[in-house]
Image 1 (cartoon, helix red, strand yellow):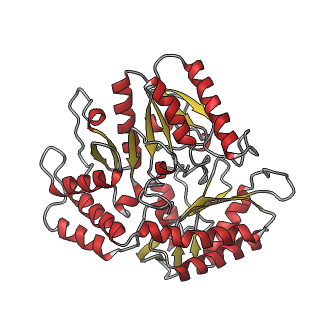
Image 2 (cartoon, one colour):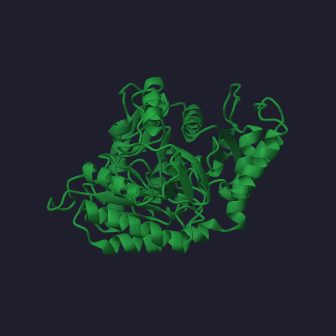
Image 3 (cartoon, rainbow, N blue to C red):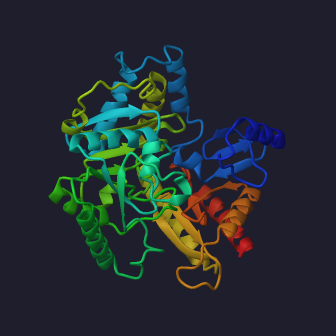
Length: 427
């Protein structure tokens, strides 16, 4: 059945759509932290549909909210008053820690970043954008234009003049080996030099606090805050891309930017807030959000259906303090992976329930040569053991581990055992 569906997929959909596994699986249903394929095999989900199933599969509170709303009205657009959209925006503004916050809802993280770029470039009257190397901000023409990862950037054409600065990752950085303070100082010096080279009025700096597609990489805590001081001197806006880091996934903070020591001007979000529903958005102070001088609507952003589901999901996350659970369960995974001491593990990094494992070819030094073939082998080994994980990184050699935030200690231990066995098998 799966092989037949794969043939139909390849015939009907673009060839550039990536699909996991030598023998791809059709996920038919989910419950809690588990999913089942069409053949009845059960898997512990440590990737959550690319960090999207944030709380749990088939969370009763979300499914009920969606069903109740579907029985009323599914769609209306922003041209009409929309109670679920307003209630969700109010809740997000309340937890945002952005002063005088307003919220614009979109169907995805790509559109959220598009909207943030529109706001910044319009307000600053400039198409110059600063971004981090190794970054990824979406799949639209404008967000690909600011993506600093060649694996996800198929064209050099761009509506922006983009400048890339150091700091997004330490393991393969030319500044690797420096202390955190020295690393931050080196990256700030690089930022100042890039700004000198750019000239003119740069509109915005956009950064993921932890780079997702890049392989769950980041600079030291405090780096983005140090950047913000330089940006503020020149009036440049800071956009924090929280599509993967938001809502408490890192455990230590509700937002990734809160580890920086500064406050961004705009925050973008998506993925986890909808728990599988198409939901994203931008948070900004009213002075920025209200600055557009032309009509602007959204046909699908903040639809009654997705807003009702997202609001139920966010309320569940807050009422059950899932940020604390991420902080509680993450260290066991992190320490277990660090303790393995495998020759093919070059780096273990991350925070809370957002962990990356960089696989390298043994005996190739530090940092070791990227080993995407080993990442593929571990992915297959995990699947055979009933565990789903993701992979990414510039070279496709990083395992990405991001279970739903309701993960139990028993499930964490089960997943870790399967992951360690798969790594040892591939070594």
